Image (cartoon, rainbow over all chains, first blue to last red; front, side, top):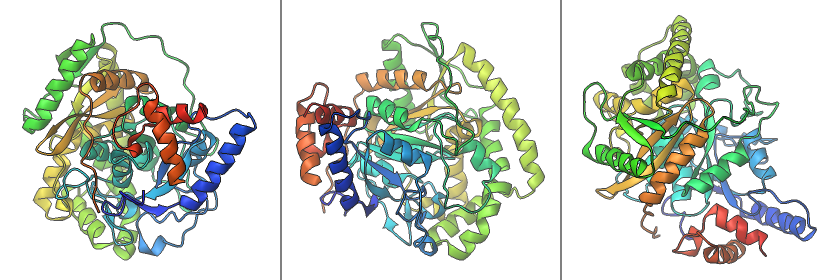
Length: 434
Length: 38
Protein backbone atom coordinates (compact mmCIF):
# COMPACT_ATOMS: atom_id res chain seq x y z
CA UNK A 1 0.00 0.00 0.00
CA UNK A 2 2.81 2.37 0.92
CA UNK A 3 4.49 1.67 -2.43
CA UNK A 4 1.62 1.95 -4.85
CA UNK A 5 -1.07 4.08 -3.26
CA UNK A 6 0.54 7.56 -3.12
CA UNK A 7 0.45 8.36 -6.85
CA UNK A 8 -3.11 7.08 -7.23
CA UNK A 9 -4.78 8.06 -3.93
CA UNK A 10 -7.25 5.19 -3.85
CA UNK A 11 -6.98 4.52 -0.10
CA UNK A 12 -7.42 7.73 1.87
CA UNK A 13 -7.17 6.26 5.37
CA UNK A 14 -4.67 3.53 6.12
CA UNK A 15 -5.72 1.14 8.88
CA UNK A 16 -2.35 -0.60 9.08
CA UNK A 17 -2.19 -0.69 12.90
CA UNK A 18 -5.70 -2.04 13.28
CA UNK A 19 -5.05 -4.51 10.46
CA UNK A 20 -1.95 -5.82 12.24
CA UNK A 21 -3.93 -6.35 15.41
CA UNK A 22 -6.67 -8.12 13.45
CA UNK A 23 -4.08 -10.31 11.72
CA UNK A 24 -2.64 -11.30 15.12
CA UNK A 25 -6.10 -12.14 16.42
CA UNK A 26 -6.83 -14.22 13.32
CA UNK A 27 -3.50 -16.02 13.67
CA UNK A 28 -4.37 -16.85 17.27
CA UNK A 29 -7.73 -18.17 16.14
CA UNK A 30 -6.04 -20.39 13.58
CA UNK A 31 -3.49 -21.66 16.13
CA UNK A 32 -6.33 -22.51 18.50
CA UNK A 33 -7.92 -24.64 15.81
CA UNK A 34 -11.06 -22.53 15.67
CA UNK A 35 -13.29 -22.46 12.63
CA UNK A 36 -11.95 -20.00 10.05
CA UNK A 37 -14.03 -17.73 7.83
CA UNK A 38 -13.92 -17.90 4.03
CA UNK A 39 -11.91 -14.66 3.89
CA UNK A 40 -9.58 -15.58 6.76
CA UNK A 41 -6.60 -13.23 6.45
CA UNK A 42 -7.63 -11.64 3.15
CA UNK A 43 -7.07 -7.86 2.92
CA UNK A 44 -10.15 -5.84 1.99
CA UNK A 45 -11.10 -2.17 1.83
CA UNK A 46 -14.24 -0.22 2.75
CA UNK A 47 -15.58 2.87 0.96
CA UNK A 48 -15.69 6.13 2.96
CA UNK A 49 -19.49 6.40 2.87
CA UNK A 50 -20.10 3.33 5.05
CA UNK A 51 -19.90 3.10 8.85
CA UNK A 52 -16.84 1.26 10.10
CA UNK A 53 -16.32 1.32 13.85
CA UNK A 54 -13.75 3.97 14.85
CA UNK A 55 -13.45 5.48 11.35
CA UNK A 56 -14.94 8.70 9.97
CA UNK A 57 -17.92 8.21 7.64
CA UNK A 58 -16.92 11.46 5.99
CA UNK A 59 -18.19 10.64 2.48
CA UNK A 60 -15.57 13.01 1.10
CA UNK A 61 -17.00 16.05 2.89
CA UNK A 62 -14.75 18.29 5.01
CA UNK A 63 -17.59 19.12 7.41
CA UNK A 64 -18.08 15.39 8.10
CA UNK A 65 -14.49 14.52 8.92
CA UNK A 66 -15.25 14.27 12.63
CA UNK A 67 -18.21 11.93 12.12
CA UNK A 68 -16.69 8.84 13.71
CA UNK A 69 -18.78 5.67 13.44
CA UNK A 70 -19.49 3.93 16.71
CA UNK A 71 -20.52 0.66 15.13
CA UNK A 72 -20.16 -1.24 11.87
CA UNK A 73 -22.53 -1.16 8.96
CA UNK A 74 -23.77 -4.80 8.57
CA UNK A 75 -21.80 -5.22 5.33
CA UNK A 76 -18.62 -4.35 7.23
CA UNK A 77 -19.60 -6.70 10.04
CA UNK A 78 -20.16 -9.47 7.49
CA UNK A 79 -16.69 -8.99 6.01
CA UNK A 80 -15.10 -9.04 9.48
CA UNK A 81 -17.13 -12.14 10.37
CA UNK A 82 -15.75 -13.83 7.25
CA UNK A 83 -12.21 -13.17 8.44
CA UNK A 84 -11.27 -10.25 6.16
CA UNK A 85 -8.59 -7.82 7.33
CA UNK A 86 -9.77 -4.28 6.67
CA UNK A 87 -6.67 -2.39 5.58
CA UNK A 88 -8.06 0.99 4.53
CA UNK A 89 -10.88 3.28 3.53
CA UNK A 90 -11.32 4.10 -0.15
CA UNK A 91 -12.07 7.41 -1.78
CA UNK A 92 -15.36 8.62 -3.30
CA UNK A 93 -16.66 11.95 -4.60
CA UNK A 94 -18.35 14.29 -2.13
CA UNK A 95 -21.62 12.68 -1.02
CA UNK A 96 -20.70 9.81 -3.40
CA UNK A 97 -22.58 11.72 -6.04
CA UNK A 98 -20.47 11.72 -9.20
CA UNK A 99 -19.27 9.27 -11.84
CA UNK A 100 -15.79 10.59 -11.01
CA UNK A 101 -13.82 10.25 -7.76
CA UNK A 102 -12.25 13.22 -6.03
CA UNK A 103 -13.17 15.66 -3.28
CA UNK A 104 -11.82 18.61 -1.31
CA UNK A 105 -11.16 16.49 1.79
CA UNK A 106 -9.07 13.70 0.29
CA UNK A 107 -8.13 14.88 -3.21
CA UNK A 108 -8.44 13.20 -6.58
CA UNK A 109 -8.14 9.46 -7.27
CA UNK A 110 -6.28 8.65 -10.48
CA UNK A 111 -7.03 5.99 -13.04
CA UNK A 112 -4.00 3.64 -13.12
CA UNK A 113 -4.48 3.08 -16.85
CA UNK A 114 -4.58 6.65 -18.11
CA UNK A 115 -4.23 9.74 -15.92
CA UNK A 116 -6.33 11.89 -18.26
CA UNK A 117 -9.38 9.63 -17.86
CA UNK A 118 -11.62 9.20 -14.85
CA UNK A 119 -11.34 6.17 -12.58
CA UNK A 120 -15.13 6.47 -12.42
CA UNK A 121 -17.34 7.14 -9.43
CA UNK A 122 -18.46 6.86 -6.94
CA UNK A 123 -16.54 3.71 -5.87
CA UNK A 124 -13.40 4.92 -7.68
CA UNK A 125 -11.06 4.36 -4.74
CA UNK A 126 -12.30 0.78 -4.42
CA UNK A 127 -11.79 0.02 -8.12
CA UNK A 128 -8.29 1.49 -8.18
CA UNK A 129 -7.29 -0.25 -4.92
CA UNK A 130 -8.24 -3.59 -6.43
CA UNK A 131 -6.94 -2.88 -9.95
CA UNK A 132 -3.43 -2.22 -8.65
CA UNK A 133 -3.53 -5.08 -6.17
CA UNK A 134 -3.64 -3.39 -2.77
CA UNK A 135 -6.67 -5.43 -1.79
CA UNK A 136 -8.06 -8.38 -3.74
CA UNK A 137 -11.57 -7.51 -2.55
CA UNK A 138 -12.88 -3.96 -2.24
CA UNK A 139 -16.28 -2.96 -0.98
CA UNK A 140 -18.31 -0.54 -3.09
CA UNK A 141 -21.89 0.60 -3.46
CA UNK A 142 -24.02 1.39 -6.47
CA UNK A 143 -27.14 3.50 -6.98
CA UNK A 144 -26.55 4.65 -10.56
CA UNK A 145 -23.57 2.55 -11.62
CA UNK A 146 -20.99 3.34 -8.92
CA UNK A 147 -19.64 -0.23 -8.71
CA UNK A 148 -20.11 -1.11 -12.36
CA UNK A 149 -18.72 2.10 -13.87
CA UNK A 150 -15.64 2.23 -11.65
CA UNK A 151 -14.92 -1.45 -12.38
CA UNK A 152 -15.33 -0.64 -16.09
CA UNK A 153 -12.97 2.34 -15.98
CA UNK A 154 -10.30 0.43 -14.05
CA UNK A 155 -10.51 -3.02 -15.69
CA UNK A 156 -11.75 -5.09 -12.74
CA UNK A 157 -14.90 -7.10 -12.03
CA UNK A 158 -17.71 -5.39 -10.15
CA UNK A 159 -20.94 -6.94 -8.90
CA UNK A 160 -24.08 -4.93 -8.26
CA UNK A 161 -26.10 -7.52 -6.32
CA UNK A 162 -29.89 -7.73 -6.44
CA UNK A 163 -31.74 -5.38 -4.16
CA UNK A 164 -32.16 -7.26 -0.87
CA UNK A 165 -29.02 -9.41 -1.04
CA UNK A 166 -26.41 -7.46 0.94
CA UNK A 167 -27.46 -5.67 4.13
CA UNK A 168 -26.58 -2.04 4.73
CA UNK A 169 -27.37 0.47 7.45
CA UNK A 170 -25.29 3.39 8.68
CA UNK A 171 -26.13 3.93 12.36
CA UNK A 172 -24.35 7.31 12.14
CA UNK A 173 -27.00 8.58 9.71
CA UNK A 174 -29.64 10.46 11.67
CA UNK A 175 -32.23 11.06 8.93
CA UNK A 176 -34.72 8.90 7.08
CA UNK A 177 -33.47 7.04 4.02
CA UNK A 178 -34.93 8.45 0.77
CA UNK A 179 -37.15 5.98 -1.09
CA UNK A 180 -34.83 6.05 -4.12
CA UNK A 181 -31.92 4.94 -1.91
CA UNK A 182 -34.07 2.25 -0.32
CA UNK A 183 -34.93 0.84 -3.75
CA UNK A 184 -31.74 1.36 -5.74
CA UNK A 185 -28.64 1.57 -3.50
CA UNK A 186 -26.85 -1.75 -3.01
CA UNK A 187 -23.50 -2.92 -1.64
CA UNK A 188 -21.14 -5.23 -3.50
CA UNK A 189 -17.57 -6.36 -4.20
CA UNK A 190 -14.96 -5.32 -6.77
CA UNK A 191 -12.26 -7.90 -7.55
CA UNK A 192 -9.74 -8.96 -10.20
CA UNK A 193 -11.30 -12.37 -10.82
CA UNK A 194 -14.76 -13.89 -10.97
CA UNK A 195 -13.94 -16.47 -8.30
CA UNK A 196 -12.96 -13.65 -5.93
CA UNK A 197 -16.18 -11.87 -6.87
CA UNK A 198 -18.15 -14.96 -5.79
CA UNK A 199 -16.10 -15.15 -2.59
CA UNK A 200 -16.60 -11.49 -1.73
CA UNK A 201 -20.30 -11.65 -2.51
CA UNK A 202 -20.84 -14.77 -0.42
CA UNK A 203 -19.19 -13.05 2.53
CA UNK A 204 -21.22 -9.85 2.15
CA UNK A 205 -24.61 -11.43 1.43
CA UNK A 206 -25.69 -12.44 4.92
CA UNK A 207 -29.09 -11.00 5.86
CA UNK A 208 -29.15 -8.75 8.90
CA UNK A 209 -32.04 -7.55 11.04
CA UNK A 210 -30.68 -4.00 10.77
CA UNK A 211 -31.62 -4.02 7.08
CA UNK A 212 -35.18 -5.34 6.79
CA UNK A 213 -34.84 -5.47 3.00
CA UNK A 214 -32.41 -8.38 3.08
CA UNK A 215 -33.48 -11.96 2.51
CA UNK A 216 -31.84 -15.35 1.94
CA UNK A 217 -33.56 -16.63 -1.21
CA UNK A 218 -34.20 -20.34 -1.69
CA UNK A 219 -31.95 -22.06 -4.26
CA UNK A 220 -33.13 -21.81 -7.86
CA UNK A 221 -33.45 -24.77 -10.24
CA UNK A 222 -30.75 -24.93 -12.91
CA UNK A 223 -31.43 -22.77 -15.97
CA UNK A 224 -32.53 -24.57 -19.12
CA UNK A 225 -29.59 -25.13 -21.52
CA UNK A 226 -28.46 -23.59 -23.74
CA UNK A 227 -29.00 -20.30 -21.95
CA UNK A 228 -30.28 -17.65 -24.34
CA UNK A 229 -28.46 -14.34 -24.00
CA UNK A 230 -30.04 -11.11 -25.25
CA UNK A 231 -27.38 -8.96 -26.86
CA UNK A 232 -28.14 -5.23 -26.72
CA UNK A 233 -26.03 -3.84 -29.56
CA UNK A 234 -27.65 -0.44 -30.02
CA UNK A 235 -29.88 1.98 -28.10
CA UNK A 236 -32.36 4.34 -29.70
CA UNK A 237 -31.09 3.07 -33.06
CA UNK A 238 -27.70 4.59 -32.25
CA UNK A 239 -24.55 2.48 -32.37
CA UNK A 240 -22.17 2.51 -29.43
CA UNK A 241 -18.57 3.71 -29.39
CA UNK A 242 -16.61 1.28 -31.63
CA UNK A 243 -14.56 -0.04 -28.69
CA UNK A 244 -17.76 -0.78 -26.74
CA UNK A 245 -19.27 -2.58 -29.73
CA UNK A 246 -16.04 -4.56 -30.13
CA UNK A 247 -16.16 -5.55 -26.44
CA UNK A 248 -19.75 -6.73 -26.82
CA UNK A 249 -18.89 -8.77 -29.91
CA UNK A 250 -15.88 -10.33 -28.17
CA UNK A 251 -17.96 -11.19 -25.09
CA UNK A 252 -20.73 -12.62 -27.29
CA UNK A 253 -18.22 -14.86 -29.09
CA UNK A 254 -16.79 -16.00 -25.76
CA UNK A 255 -20.26 -16.90 -24.51
CA UNK A 256 -21.12 -18.73 -27.75
CA UNK A 257 -17.90 -20.68 -27.38
CA UNK A 258 -18.96 -21.62 -23.85
CA UNK A 259 -22.28 -22.99 -25.11
CA UNK A 260 -24.57 -20.00 -24.64
CA UNK A 261 -26.94 -18.97 -27.42
CA UNK A 262 -26.47 -15.24 -28.06
CA UNK A 263 -28.93 -13.29 -30.19
CA UNK A 264 -29.70 -9.60 -30.64
CA UNK A 265 -32.69 -8.66 -28.46
CA UNK A 266 -33.52 -5.70 -26.29
CA UNK A 267 -35.30 -5.87 -22.94
CA UNK A 268 -38.56 -3.95 -22.97
CA UNK A 269 -38.45 -0.15 -22.72
CA UNK A 270 -34.83 0.04 -21.67
CA UNK A 271 -34.74 3.78 -22.33
CA UNK A 272 -37.97 4.33 -20.39
CA UNK A 273 -36.37 2.48 -17.47
CA UNK A 274 -33.31 4.73 -17.64
CA UNK A 275 -35.47 7.82 -17.85
CA UNK A 276 -37.48 6.72 -14.82
CA UNK A 277 -34.31 6.81 -12.69
CA UNK A 278 -34.30 10.64 -12.44
CA UNK A 279 -38.07 10.74 -11.96
CA UNK A 280 -37.57 8.65 -8.83
CA UNK A 281 -34.29 10.07 -7.58
CA UNK A 282 -34.27 13.76 -8.44
CA UNK A 283 -37.32 14.90 -6.43
CA UNK A 284 -36.30 12.56 -3.60
CA UNK A 285 -32.60 11.77 -3.04
CA UNK A 286 -31.23 14.83 -4.84
CA UNK A 287 -33.79 17.20 -3.37
CA UNK A 288 -32.87 15.95 0.11
CA UNK A 289 -29.13 16.30 -0.53
CA UNK A 290 -29.11 19.63 -2.36
CA UNK A 291 -29.07 21.93 0.70
CA UNK A 292 -26.10 19.96 2.08
CA UNK A 293 -24.31 20.02 -1.26
CA UNK A 294 -24.80 23.77 -1.39
CA UNK A 295 -23.48 24.28 2.15
CA UNK A 296 -20.79 21.61 2.46
CA UNK A 297 -20.08 20.29 -1.03
CA UNK A 298 -16.81 20.96 -2.82
CA UNK A 299 -16.72 22.73 -6.18
CA UNK A 300 -16.74 19.46 -8.11
CA UNK A 301 -19.88 17.97 -6.59
CA UNK A 302 -21.65 21.34 -6.59
CA UNK A 303 -20.99 21.77 -10.30
CA UNK A 304 -21.77 18.13 -11.18
CA UNK A 305 -25.01 18.06 -9.16
CA UNK A 306 -26.01 21.46 -10.58
CA UNK A 307 -25.58 20.12 -14.10
CA UNK A 308 -27.61 17.01 -13.26
CA UNK A 309 -30.35 19.34 -12.08
CA UNK A 310 -30.31 21.20 -15.38
CA UNK A 311 -30.48 18.00 -17.42
CA UNK A 312 -32.92 16.37 -15.01
CA UNK A 313 -35.21 19.16 -13.76
CA UNK A 314 -37.72 16.89 -11.96
CA UNK A 315 -38.66 18.41 -8.58
CA UNK A 316 -42.30 17.46 -7.94
CA UNK A 317 -42.54 14.85 -5.12
CA UNK A 318 -45.70 13.51 -6.82
CA UNK A 319 -43.40 12.42 -9.66
CA UNK A 320 -41.84 9.88 -7.28
CA UNK A 321 -45.17 8.11 -6.84
CA UNK A 322 -45.65 7.88 -10.60
CA UNK A 323 -42.07 6.61 -10.97
CA UNK A 324 -42.72 3.91 -8.36
CA UNK A 325 -45.67 2.68 -10.41
CA UNK A 326 -43.57 2.77 -13.57
CA UNK A 327 -40.79 0.84 -11.84
CA UNK A 328 -43.11 -2.04 -10.96
CA UNK A 329 -44.64 -2.09 -14.45
CA UNK A 330 -41.21 -2.14 -16.09
CA UNK A 331 -39.83 -4.77 -13.72
CA UNK A 332 -42.78 -7.02 -14.52
CA UNK A 333 -42.05 -6.63 -18.25
CA UNK A 334 -38.33 -7.33 -17.77
CA UNK A 335 -39.02 -10.42 -15.65
CA UNK A 336 -41.22 -11.79 -18.45
CA UNK A 337 -38.42 -11.03 -20.93
CA UNK A 338 -35.88 -12.76 -18.69
CA UNK A 339 -37.76 -16.05 -18.91
CA UNK A 340 -36.81 -16.48 -22.57
CA UNK A 341 -33.47 -14.66 -22.20
CA UNK A 342 -32.19 -15.35 -18.67
CA UNK A 343 -29.17 -13.15 -19.34
CA UNK A 344 -28.72 -9.76 -20.96
CA UNK A 345 -25.36 -8.77 -22.45
CA UNK A 346 -25.21 -5.01 -22.74
CA UNK A 347 -22.78 -2.13 -22.33
CA UNK A 348 -21.82 -0.78 -18.94
CA UNK A 349 -21.47 2.61 -20.56
CA UNK A 350 -21.79 3.26 -24.28
CA UNK A 351 -18.53 5.28 -24.19
CA UNK A 352 -15.03 4.64 -22.77
CA UNK A 353 -14.10 6.32 -19.46
CA UNK A 354 -14.67 10.05 -19.85
CA UNK A 355 -12.01 12.73 -19.37
CA UNK A 356 -11.27 13.72 -15.79
CA UNK A 357 -13.85 16.27 -14.58
CA UNK A 358 -15.89 16.16 -17.81
CA UNK A 359 -18.97 15.50 -15.67
CA UNK A 360 -18.61 18.89 -13.99
CA UNK A 361 -17.96 20.96 -17.09
CA UNK A 362 -21.06 21.98 -19.02
CA UNK A 363 -24.66 20.95 -19.57
CA UNK A 364 -24.17 19.42 -23.02
CA UNK A 365 -21.33 17.17 -21.82
CA UNK A 366 -23.30 16.11 -18.75
CA UNK A 367 -26.30 15.30 -20.95
CA UNK A 368 -24.06 13.18 -23.20
CA UNK A 369 -22.56 11.35 -20.20
CA UNK A 370 -26.03 10.68 -18.77
CA UNK A 371 -27.10 9.27 -22.15
CA UNK A 372 -24.06 6.99 -22.23
CA UNK A 373 -24.81 5.70 -18.70
CA UNK A 374 -28.38 4.63 -19.45
CA UNK A 375 -27.52 0.90 -19.46
CA UNK A 376 -26.56 1.32 -15.81
CA UNK A 377 -29.34 3.60 -14.59
CA UNK A 378 -32.00 1.34 -16.16
CA UNK A 379 -30.66 -1.67 -14.24
CA UNK A 380 -30.38 0.36 -11.01
CA UNK A 381 -34.02 1.37 -11.27
CA UNK A 382 -35.09 -2.27 -11.48
CA UNK A 383 -32.83 -3.61 -8.71
CA UNK A 384 -31.47 -6.40 -10.90
CA UNK A 385 -28.11 -8.12 -10.34
CA UNK A 386 -25.39 -7.13 -12.81
CA UNK A 387 -21.70 -7.78 -13.28
CA UNK A 388 -19.34 -5.36 -14.98
CA UNK A 389 -16.71 -7.56 -16.65
CA UNK A 390 -13.50 -6.32 -18.32
CA UNK A 391 -13.28 -7.60 -21.88
CA UNK A 392 -10.56 -5.81 -23.82
CA UNK A 393 -8.19 -2.84 -23.78
CA UNK A 394 -8.61 -0.10 -26.37
CA UNK A 395 -6.48 3.01 -26.69
CA UNK A 396 -4.90 2.27 -23.33
CA UNK A 397 -8.22 1.96 -21.51
CA UNK A 398 -10.07 -1.14 -20.31
CA UNK A 399 -13.50 -1.67 -21.87
CA UNK A 400 -16.00 -4.08 -20.41
CA UNK A 401 -19.52 -5.39 -20.71
CA UNK A 402 -22.49 -5.70 -18.38
CA UNK A 403 -24.25 -9.00 -17.66
CA UNK A 404 -27.74 -8.67 -16.18
CA UNK A 405 -30.09 -11.35 -14.83
CA UNK A 406 -33.42 -11.66 -13.02
CA UNK A 407 -33.65 -10.78 -9.31
CA UNK A 408 -31.44 -12.98 -7.11
CA UNK A 409 -29.94 -14.81 -10.13
CA UNK A 410 -26.40 -13.60 -9.47
CA UNK A 411 -25.25 -17.15 -10.22
CA UNK A 412 -26.14 -16.71 -13.90
CA UNK A 413 -24.05 -13.52 -14.02
CA UNK A 414 -21.12 -15.25 -12.28
CA UNK A 415 -21.17 -18.21 -14.68
CA UNK A 416 -21.28 -16.01 -17.77
CA UNK A 417 -18.61 -13.60 -16.47
CA UNK A 418 -16.43 -16.62 -15.71
CA UNK A 419 -16.88 -17.90 -19.26
CA UNK A 420 -15.82 -14.53 -20.64
CA UNK A 421 -12.89 -14.27 -18.21
CA UNK A 422 -11.61 -17.72 -19.21
CA UNK A 423 -11.58 -16.77 -22.90
CA UNK A 424 -10.59 -13.11 -22.59
CA UNK A 425 -8.28 -12.94 -19.55
CA UNK A 426 -8.33 -9.38 -18.21
CA UNK A 427 -5.18 -7.30 -18.54
CA UNK A 428 -3.62 -5.73 -15.48
CA UNK A 429 -2.94 -1.99 -15.41
CA UNK A 430 0.60 -0.65 -15.73
CA UNK A 431 2.42 -0.79 -12.41
CA UNK A 432 2.08 2.52 -10.60
CA UNK A 433 5.15 4.65 -10.06
CA UNK A 434 5.61 7.33 -7.47
CA UNK B 1 1.62 -6.49 8.13
CA UNK B 2 3.13 -5.68 4.76
CA UNK B 3 5.74 -8.39 5.25
CA UNK B 4 3.19 -10.88 6.45
CA UNK B 5 0.89 -10.25 3.52
CA UNK B 6 3.85 -10.42 1.17
CA UNK B 7 4.77 -13.79 2.63
CA UNK B 8 1.24 -15.04 2.28
CA UNK B 9 1.07 -13.67 -1.24
CA UNK B 10 4.31 -15.45 -2.13
CA UNK B 11 2.78 -18.72 -0.96
CA UNK B 12 -0.40 -17.87 -2.81
CA UNK B 13 1.57 -17.57 -6.03
CA UNK B 14 2.56 -21.18 -5.68
CA UNK B 15 -1.04 -22.22 -5.19
CA UNK B 16 -2.86 -23.69 -8.20
CA UNK B 17 -4.65 -21.07 -10.26
CA UNK B 18 -2.91 -18.10 -8.68
CA UNK B 19 -1.91 -15.05 -10.67
CA UNK B 20 1.59 -14.43 -11.90
CA UNK B 21 3.28 -11.11 -11.42
CA UNK B 22 4.33 -8.96 -8.49
CA UNK B 23 3.66 -10.27 -5.01
CA UNK B 24 0.87 -7.83 -4.33
CA UNK B 25 -1.12 -9.20 -7.23
CA UNK B 26 -2.11 -12.42 -5.41
CA UNK B 27 -5.85 -13.04 -5.50
CA UNK B 28 -8.17 -13.51 -2.54
CA UNK B 29 -9.06 -17.15 -3.17
CA UNK B 30 -5.42 -18.27 -3.47
CA UNK B 31 -4.38 -16.09 -0.57
CA UNK B 32 -7.06 -17.54 1.70
CA UNK B 33 -6.01 -21.06 0.68
CA UNK B 34 -2.33 -20.28 1.34
CA UNK B 35 -3.04 -18.86 4.79
CA UNK B 36 -5.08 -21.91 5.74
CA UNK B 37 -2.27 -24.16 4.57
CA UNK B 38 0.28 -22.60 6.93
